[in-house]
Length: 244
Image (cartoon, rainbow, N blue to C red; front, top):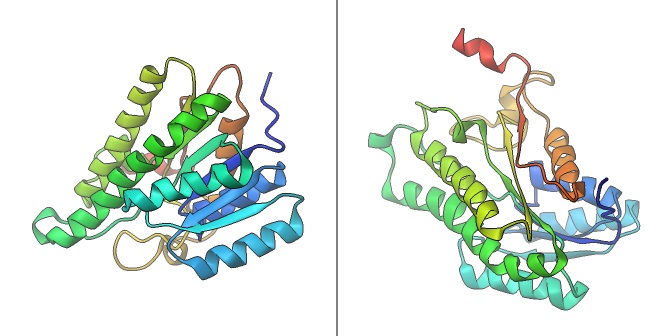
């Protein structure tokens, strides 16, 4: 028993690249109309044009900085005005800055926390009334760093521990009205960087998780009904060898 998501409506934050872009494509392939949110408008427009040319869906691009609560409210309002509903929120926007606590500037700290914590809160708060109405799904892109200590970037890890704690506690508060899923990937081969080279540059194929794998997990979460997937962990196969 799964939900038919053909014709449903999803917002994907951080949609301009990596996991967000792959998720938008994977959802569109299932017939989902996708609202693309990120700061880089040109990339969003390119993605929207490509998605619409390949799949029989509609897209909406809404340039959005998730750190700005008014912009996030406008994103949700624009979605509902265009499509009349919201069935899925993919809280994906996130970043990493700096590493060692004593070297982390206040600006780097606030940028990371404002994006990874406040951004997910703003998007969730704005979307919840509409997700309640549709009995929809809220997906949070967490991290391996939100489950295990990350000595080389403790502030980023703390933001992902917050994501996980917020999502699981929210699921309890919602009492089944909205499905809540946390997807926890290890390093994903994207342009994401924790300082220095990107993960796409650092890892060869097979050495890290691919963004398409995360996208498939998000589609899986969106399809679950009447049950829900509380957490989905996706790690490269040799991930735990570092602990041996």
